[in-house]
Image 1 (cartoon, rainbow, N blue to C red):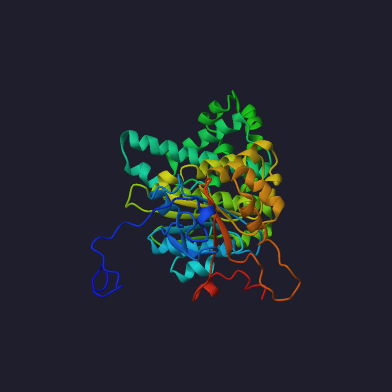
Image 2: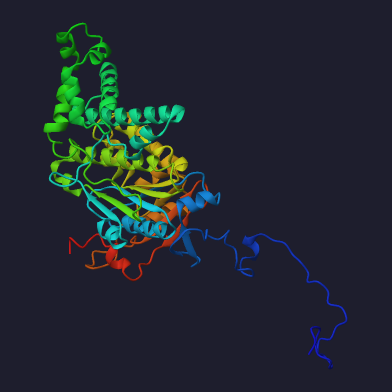
Length: 458
């Protein structure tokens, strides 16, 4: 037998083999003859999520890996879906994958808690914030404060101003939350000067320290308040003193009025700040806990920037709880999350519905909150009703088949007890104007136990 046929009659023997005829046509015309009509395959970069619902190929996702490969422009992920559709399961798979690839997972404010078991399983750190438990000092900037003392020259001055700005911004956000109204310009000037005075006296000031220096009223503060005598100064700072007093003795007492008791350990594979214990005290305390946790976590990441190169995955669940406490809080959260790419940090924001935007008090806040989705290069949609998808499509373009697919996951077809929710474990991954990737996640091994958020109900 030769490559050109057998040496026998009718054996196909040929001295010269001609090239086959080539024909061109669209996939619509020849799809029955040529079955490979799908577009380019799903990226095989990152954590395996599941299989493509149409083609069966493995779908992988890692926001930092996709950024490095040039598939996306930023490492932001926005996860949106009804309760019970598996949003937490999807995020937990990303957490496990990021740890395996060497990133540190930071769950900045676990309100239920959903992530404690997983973090403990991988040998991570769990910080439990609440009265009688761990405390977080809102003015604690972690390694940044130490950097100020160790650096010299222009770099030290730049870091000092960064520390000051962070402390002042969070203090103003907490005051805004307590009084449900913005801090005035005069009060901002006075708070800034108080922080400057404390920076000269203490390495890590606390809110009671700020309150004490305001009540002391040294000459530098009276000058900042434009008060010629002590009585005038007392009038100027009266509202501010009562606001800070509420942070120390009111409904927020016992949580943010002392030094940080358990610093975040960035050498751990994962860190979860469990704030579920403050949830029972009301939305105001929960919002304060989330804001302080976010600020402290990002400060720790920034402070570690001068050391060995690291990457982080920051998870911000129950996003809207931290935004609707008072007008202006969206601006603070927005400033915290803008520079993730420069920090080597991917962020995952999770919420149930864009209708949560309607709870924000001003149109300015609602517009800035929509910017969170706009700035996230990757949008992950679990089961959502058609009216919700119409709103999503205004921000992230969805084709009609994509909307119909996601809507089909939104509600069970029958009332049969024990029936599996049709959208459980099904997600549409969208990046820019590319066609979405429909993927179905299947749990393996111990994941069934670690990712289960319904254990308490059962």
